[in-house]
Amino acid sequence: MIDRSEIPLDTPIEPVPAKAERPALRIARDFVQSPAAVIGLIGFLVIATAAILAPWITPQNPYDLAQLDIMEGRLPPLAESFAGQTWWLGTDDQGRDMLSAIIYGLRISLAVGASSTLAALLIGAGLGLVAAYYGGKVETAIMRVVDLQLSFPAILVALILLAILGRGVDKVVIALIIVQWAYYARTIRGTALVERSKEYVEAARCLALGSRRILFHHLLPNCLPPLIVIATVQVANAIALEATLSFLGVGVPITEPSLGLLISNGYGYMLSGDYWISFFPGIALLITIVCINLMGDQLRDILNPRLQR
Image: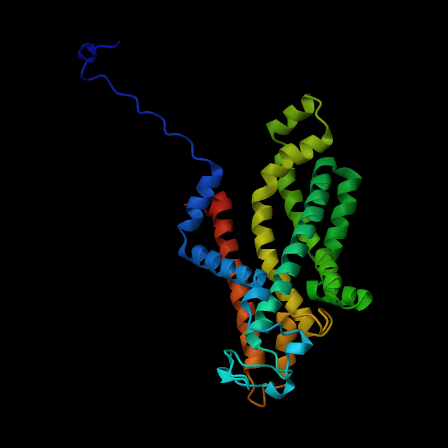
């Protein structure tokens, strides 16, 4: 046992090294320190929860013909139905409750945005890793296809694809996957080129590890931060693109709820004063995209070391 009286008073005391903070905890701590990101997260959770619970929280199924009454069409906000029920956001020309239609429309928008982004991320990340790791003719072939696709506007490519595939939720998802994958392929290829020349990849090659293990166990985890940021932003872009396609009449069919389709249905009544048919779906679409972008901007600041103070 050490006698403290024998230690000279001028002996410097070594500080106890602080325990390293886990990256996930650091990201969560930095995320909640941003009021804008917290507002975006809360807003997105409220929107997603409402969309999931739509059959139980909405006063009407807007796409069940048995629940519609055309005599109650184009009622203004806060109007009452013949049964005494209040339509908080009014009704459209078919007698649909706009609040119910918006919540049901959010289900399609979020599902299309999330599924298309996830599938495009998997395809683009895989092709980008392969291009960066093998190089040569494989990289040239993949990147020429990427450059060719990115040279055309996304909306133009989606319109051409839907003109060939036809209308439908599944057709819109396929079109958005084809439109988005090139962004992820180019991003992960640039990141993987930097990581490929580092020591841990050379060590894995010296240990004769398989290419699949090096790609997905070593390269991919170190390329995830930029992919997470782009995926967050691309979800918002996919939702906006789906709404644009539905507004133009080539996206979701009229039998399915969609925010873009709701905006399109009410566009013809704007001049007659029935603004609410297009206005409230547009506001819902705007709030959804803003909430997702607020989270994406904060994730970009956290995961990009150049933007950290």
